[in-house]
Image 1: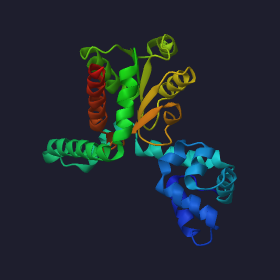
Image 2: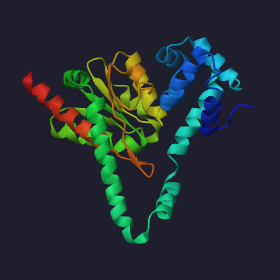
Image 3: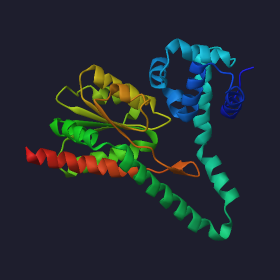
Image 4: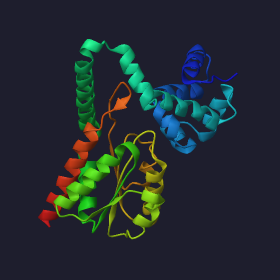
Length: 272
């Protein structure tokens, strides 16, 4: 019987490690090293990054007892939901693990450490040539359309504020009353889209970014993985993987990158 959860899958792969054929062993190693990529990549994308044929992924899944690769992929998606439980569960966990007398100090220290780690990671993950390309793309745009839903909505709002203060025309796609497609309808090839989304990705952001890309509108994406649905739509994308404290993820690196993009875009425009 196929394992019903990620830990069961890990145990099964460990027990079969020596007996798996070479290609299946290669997939197993890739899956355990890149679980988020397996959760959201297509069969073709995962196969390319794992260095195997797409049919081998299906064979791998069936060898473990799953109906097909999508059945196996669901295990990796369920793992992400477990990593980021709902907010009541997160608060309950904090109350259970911290003593009351030092709880406030622990909270402050925990979130400060997560923010610092996020910033360190961002320095390593954002390539300067891609950052420069992102600035060039935004600086050339007549209007910048801003996409960001759910937990990253505050970043999109900040970008609207910052671009406005810097004299750059920007429109926030807030998707109120499900009007995101209509709000983006006026965008053209002389404009640009700045799209922001992290695991678990907001479908509306991915859909609107894909729609813009099909219409030839340049897309700059801020996201957390090469397997993010935003990557296939983006002309240039910047990788940010925020650290978390008690499953509450920081936004420190994302805000820092957004500020740098806004100021860099204004400077580039001023150069003419």
